[in-house]
Every structure is written in structure tokens, then in C-alpha cells.
Amino acid sequence: MREKILKAIDKNSKLTAKELAVMLGAEEAAVAATIKDLEAESIICGYPTLINWDKTESEKVTALIEVKVTPQRGQGFDRIAERIYKFDEVKSVYLMSGGFDLTVIIDGKSMREVANFVSSKLAPMEAVLSTATHFVLKKYKEHGMPLVHEIEDERMLITP
Amino acid sequence: MRNPLNNKVVNIQPSGIRKFFDIVSEMKDAISLGVGEPDFDTPWHIREEGIYSLEKGKTFYTSNSGLIELRKEICNYLYRRCNLTYDYRHDVLVTVGGSEAIDVALRAMLDEGDEVLIPQPCYVSYLPCVLLADGKPVIIELKHENQFKLTKQELLDSITDKTKVLVLPFPNNPTGAIMTEEELKEIAEVVIEKDLFVLSDEIYCELTYGTKHVSIASLPGMKERTIVINGFSKSYAMTGWRLGYAAGPSNIIEQMTKIHQFAIMCAPTTSQYAAVEALRAGDPDVQMMREDYDKRRRYVVNALREMGLECFEPFGAFYVFPCIKNLGMTSDEFANALLQEEKVAVVPGTAFGECGEGFLRISYAYSIENLKEALGRMDRFVKKHS
Image 1 (tube, rainbow over the protein chains, first blue to last red):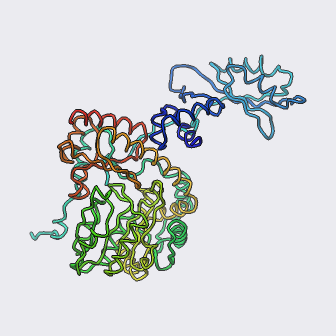
Image 2 (image 1 turned 45 degrees about the vertical axis):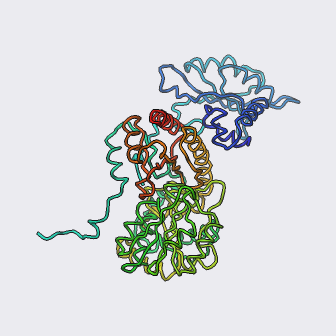
Image 3 (image 1 turned 90 degrees about the vertical axis):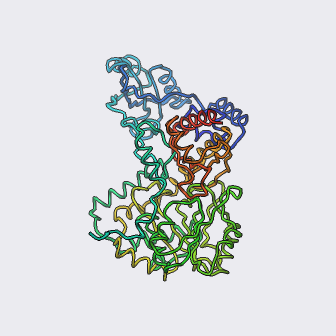
């Protein structure tokens, strides 16, 4: 039941408990209770909206920053990761295997703002050894959904 | 000038769906619940395999029966999915969609005057194909109270000494009805006793909800008298690739292959390569689509019942077949009025046989958002007219 609900709302968080109950063949109250539990356990962490900002007037840049850091005794990477993710402009932080340690994805209004963040906030942190900033030029797909072209139903309206 | 036309062909009625299609096409902003094909794109890894075959220059004819690797995969599939054992060398023919398989099977089996039992409501092509093959179609009108399943008694009542073939279209388009193993056993008994053959159209076999599809050919004594029709259109969302197949006794397949050889030559090569990939690696896609359809199925059945329309629960394909008799309109009138007033296209049940009168075929091969909008409009329409 939990997994079924999660799978159903993974790509559409607008479904109501009532609709989910119908679609999954379950009781509405049970679905609502399960969702509450999932929220309480931070398995469902939020209901953000997938917006293609490129199609709006607002200026926005996204950068992916590769960060090498020194892990700290007793706390590994968690503490430095926390210091980084607490900044509002940071959208995602991942610990990586391979040639660097953290991937930091940040949104800013301009390249200058992103550059400022890197040079004045991120790079000077004691544990940070180096950064490499890559700007996103175009977003093709996010959260499993293509952003670049309109999905049009090309089927004929009536077929046998 | 002499009449250039063949009377048999001229006398065949064009599909009722065609008439409605022309009306709907006029209406630019209509939203539809009328399609008979999946809304999913063909899974990318399958398309990619088709593209790769083109890049490698695999652009030639294949053998008449189809690529050996494809026929082998079809046999593997039928074994793993339906517990059927076929020899890829003699028992399988790859065709241009399930439709061609239906046509050549009937042409290979029928002599003039042979009777073919066709349970309706059903897909539109069996009847004209029987007529073109000089057979005599005998309609069995399935009943709502039986959830549009074929019963032993209905079958017995329709058999004469001319009866040769029974068409068995389950999971069913347009009703969504399925036949369970127990129900098929009763049918199989009669078929064996009366020495009939079965044309079992199992194109929707992957789309059953709650129970696994059972092929009548897997029942004792049935493999040698059953032609199984299947294909890639519905299971793998590959309608435009035009690829299907027939599996059955080698003596029938051999004659079918002869017709196919002269009329078609071979099924499209690119599609055949893509289909190999579908059968080898497409199970997760099928599973994903089935789960998604199942959610929409429940959603649509619930919405129709909330409108006050009587609606049996369909366990197969992607159609719901609600009854509109309490609104005092014919299926045609309902479909036309709904289109004019709310710009929603549904298919009148009569497009699938006269006994579809009083019913509509509603397809749920659409996104939930689309279904929500269309069913909301339909709800308004039903309220206004009841």
C-alpha cells in the first residue's frame, strides 16, 4: 500500500486521498492515514511543483558545482554537507563516489550571483579544498518529465 | 462500361466507427475517450532497436514467416506467459498486425458456407473478414447480465452442422470482459465435442487486472484446434509498427503462410527487429503500463457509477462499457449529443454489433487529467438529461 501510494504520487502530487483510494482500490481513510504516516516519517518530504522557468520572464541560472572537501573526524562528510545545504540558494547536495566529494546544485538570479556564492561562501569554508562550477545551459528533462517539447496526442480521435 | 466492382465487397457495410469518426473529425476542439490504442509511446529501448537496425542497413525482406529470432522469441514468450509450446519452424507466422492474422486465418480455414460464430459486441473486423472468405457469420449476442462473457449455453444454441470456427475475442474490445480458466473449460468441452476450431484473439492478453490471462489453447485437447492471434500493438504500445502473429497447428499455419506470402510477402523488417527487443526486455514496460491502466480503470468505473450509470467491472483491455439505457437515448443519440453539447467523443456500443445498443465504449488509454476533464463534462451531460 505504501509503495503503491508513493509510486502513484511520484509524478502527480495533486491526486487527492479520495482519488488515490479509487485508483488503488483502497479505503479513503486508510490512504489518508498512510500519507500522514509517510509525511511524519519524512518519506514524503514535500510537494514541490515542477516549473520550467526557462519559459517564464524571470531570469534564473542553475549551476552544478563539484566540491572536494576534507572529511571531519567523527562526522565524515555530514557536517560539511549540512553547512552547505543550509544556504537557501542551494537546491540539492549529494555525496559522490569518484573524483570529487559533493555535488552542489544551486539556483541563482545571474551568473554573477552564483559566482559570488562560490567565491564568498562556498570556497572559503575551511573544509573545502576546491570547487569546479558548471553552468546549466538548457534543461531537457527533470524528475522524469521532458521539458523541451510539448507532449501532443497524435492519435486519431476515434479508432476501433 | 462494365461494373468494375465485386458484389461481395460492395455489399460489406463500412464500419460504424467510421461514420462517427467523420463527425468527430469535424470538431476541432473535441476531447476524446474514443481511441483503441495505448497513449504510451513505444518504450524507447524498443524504438532504439528499430533505429539501430536501420542504421545497420537491415532494410531487406525477411523470410515469409518472419525473422527466425523473432519467431523463437514469440515461442519463448508464449511458453513463459501462456504455457503454450510451439515450434518456431512450423507453428508461427509473423503478420502485419493482428488484423492480418485474423484475415489469413479465416481465409485459410473457411470453405464457402462454413459458419463462423462471432460473439458480439466485438472488434469490427471479424465479420467482414468472414464474408470476404466466403464464410457465413453467425452472431452470438453476449449479455450484460453475464458481464459479456460467452456462456456454454449460448454457444450450444448457435451451433449447426455447418459451424466450423468460433471466434473468441477475450480480453474483449469493446466491453473489457475476460474469460477465466473455468469458463474457458466449459467452452473448450463444447468445441471438442462438436469438432470446431477456435480463432482466439488474445491481442489484449497482457492487459488483465487482478487475474492472469489464460489462453484457451493451453487447455487439454485445444492446442490442435486453436489459432492464437496476438501482437505487439497493445502490450508494447506499438500500434503504428503494424506487427502481430498467429500461432497454431502447423497444417493451418502452412496454408496461412501461403496467403501471406502472396499478399504481403513479409511483415515490416524494422518492426520485426524492434519486436525482438520488446519480447526480450519489454516485460517491465508491460508491467508499468498495466499498473497505470489499472488505476485509471478503477477511476473511470467509479466516476461512471457516481454519475448513476450502470457499469459492470471490466477486468481486461482498456475499455469500460457503461449502460445508458435509463437515459432514454440510443447509443448513437447519446454519443452525438455528448459530442455536440460537451465536445466529448465516445464510441456508441452499436459500432461493435447491434447488441451494443444502450451502451458506450469508453477508453481509458488517456492521462488521468484528460479522463478527469472528459468525465467531468460527461457528468454534467448525464445530470442534464436524466
